[in-house]
Image (cartoon, rainbow, N blue to C red; front, side, top):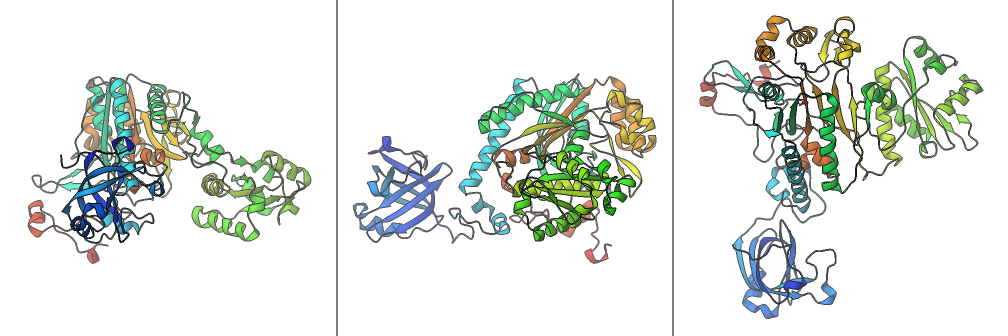
Length: 593
Ligand code: ASP
């Protein structure tokens, strides 16, 4: 080894020992009489001192050091003089008095400085990822990621799961997003699809008797990227045979409890809390509610029907909903101008037509420009339902169900943070279960699978497939951490007739279904046991457990929001010969409508 210790290792116990450290020059300070260099590696930093006792030659040589030079420094471990002790640094009691210096490699002036606290632009960091990854925070995050994945692997191995790899070049398995396609050279005009998930492979493995499967699987979805999505991401993918929803939830509860303890030293109670999708939409307007604070949505449609305020009345009379929240403490915090801004927020971001509000005065009365349209008994009931207290701000949206959900969910999320209704360091884990089987695509007037087409309806809802698909609830479950979906899964259909019926509801006749999923329909006829599973988003787990707010910080080499890798410059063009072999001609961008 070119080093005897790491840069995070030396303590007062080592004083007097001769050691060699290898690492990068983090910072250097020339004090005339001596040079102080912090040398850094993955494990920490150690102060290396070049003083008069190092000899003139070595002192001079050390003056050539610059940021990010890679060096090997040999010397004696010594106590730091009292005044130089750094309590914040693990090695802050000692320093290395250098007797031999080797410059192993030089560095240009780094455009991204690993020692700098203030970060440069993210584009610059991603372009020079080899420098950005040197930062202590990135090391900490990638180590956390590694521990989470190891924790998961150990847990599933302890529970008799076996790890099976599934192909990356496959046929598309629809999870609702666009596929990444890979042209086949051998089969001119044919394409592989990169897996959106190993969904069908894992179901096939179950049918083949591998009754507990797990994989840390890379998945690819060619979507327009939202802030916390990546075109390629990693899932902990698992599947089990002979189970019901409760069994899968139970296994994941056990994993969550274990990881919360290992990673956060948090004692969670098993089972984790559960609520149905319908309840989540009613109480929070969203299927992944943040349960770290209250501010629940309350329905006022019945009261709205009795008031004189035209907007409320007409929405209530026409089958819409009037719902509200109590932004507790918001009456004092938000001025009229702020409320105007909140109104623009719900209009622009969620398509609401407006925002009605009441401020709760010190004497408990409700103040609002629209208050005159409500008699006292209605005002009392409004205050009562929202448990209004002086200083609160009551906010209402009147619209169709979905708009009220979206707008109030958005408001709740924003105001919960702004009013500091929870400690951002707290963690909340829960389940949302029994999602609808289908969403209705209004534009195309057809049903689309809410999760994926292999999801089983609740057994009591089987008839609804024929009579009222919109009301049909699935054996589906999502794990929610702090208001983010951290995983989702379902019990699958294991009966060919039901699978075909669901395909038909989704607009696939027998022929289409055969063409796309013939292998699944066939396999279902050769003895498929009841089964179900789940996938957990590992990148998101790292983000949430690490208290980070950017998914790209949880991945060593992420893509930008425009799906590019700024370091390698992917995607890139390829030469004509490569395209020719694939039988592909590229349409110039300006001809592609
Ligand atoms: N394949 C699903 C997904 O990636 C997860 C599952 O149903 O197990 O969302």
